[in-house]
Length: 122
Image 1: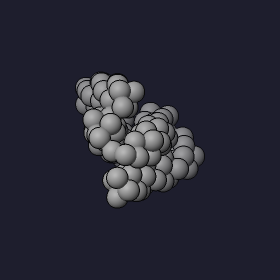
Image 2: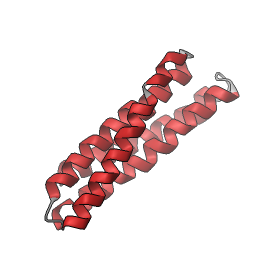
Image 3: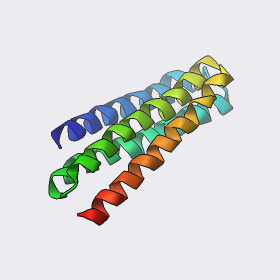
Image 4: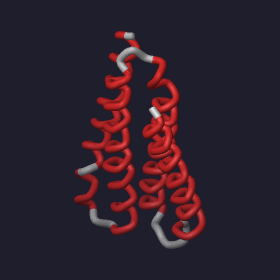
């Protein structure tokens, strides 16, 4: 579906911009540990931004495209919660923000399970 493709592209623009920001502006400002956390956020952001692009490209080819669209929205939530919490944690140092990260991880898992179901069903 077009919306997933557009959202995926937007997520990729943001991932590249944030990755460049981290590599250039934050490298000297963050500790090695906080930089590693930020980079983990970028890694998952890129992987799942590409996932959204993929879902947008294949959604129209599957009988159960509504499951793919749902998976896309869940994946977007995963990016916002997982990567977003890691960005916020690394920039603020507030460790409690790390409690949000697993919720985003579960959203990633759920989105891929939905993709599996949609592919198996049609």
